[in-house]
Picture (cartoon, rainbow, N blue to C red):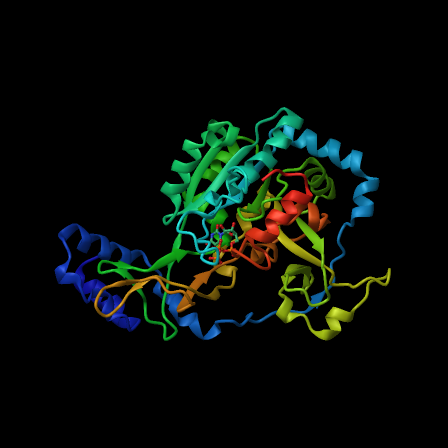
Length: 408
Ligand code: UTP
């Protein structure tokens, strides 16, 4: 893209300030900025008026979860089916580690955070140890795909190399980067992170399949006969991945996706609830739940919207090709965005100062035909780390780890 073309594009979106320091830049920096302007989708900026809103939704109805009592009754059947699928190499794991972890406030990738008290226990280590439990039980190495982003890729790879993948087989780990989206202030003006670079951030955790496909990894899934892929977040340190019962229950149910869910702790708990929307699987956000929905009961007299998602899904690979990014809503999220001020000094704000644009994995569920909500015990499988202290924090996750006999 030439400077004149870049100027035209920026003018169209009212972003001419991006070229303010152009003449001061070295030639390679100029080229790199022009490429960034060319590659960045600025049309997302028109969505800022939707910030904090959920967008148009359809008609919600309940979707029954497979509860612990049924899972317990059919444990052997599920377990055997899961072990078989894993031993046949049909199952892979997908770690979502492209996020910035801004709430945690560490400059490193979230997985590098040490939650240990008397020894080092890194978040990545906890996840790999949990996956190793399944590897050891089934005597099968499970393919692990790690999605990073431009911002944390090198640090993530270097760290896992240094730690010798915490005992995982290196050849079974594949990294790839997700795409980026621009970040802007509350008026929709792009932030600059340096004189020659627009501030960008990872474009949300839904991009995992298209980002995999963009680097040809969908072909790898096909060639290796991988039929199921367990997609999970980096920040849940009790996360069980590809556990045979979950895999078996999902495979036997013949659904497009299995979703791990936990029983809500309160009727208004701040968690996305699994349900149907216009007859298709979906997730209703806590702020979208009406009083009527919170009080609705199922046939057994239990709350009808009672199961929250924990960002652990087992997707049926053949059905993913039909999932497209452009049918998913764009979430406009308030975040802390580092930027250069009028005098080109880099500012790292301590409070949110603008918007990022993300597509979320939960919106993928709505594009699929069928879903099995699979109940797990919250205290055993859900210890998310979002903040340093308080709810969903390093503190709360430490407590839960200890309750599960994990030495810190
Ligand atoms: P969160 O929504 O908690 O976001 O991610 P985050 O970026 O890690 O943290 P904050 O909001 O800045 O504090 C949930 C999961 O989705 C992944 C994260 O790495 C985490 O595993 N994720 C999030 C991505 O892989 N890419 C993204 O663009 C966003």
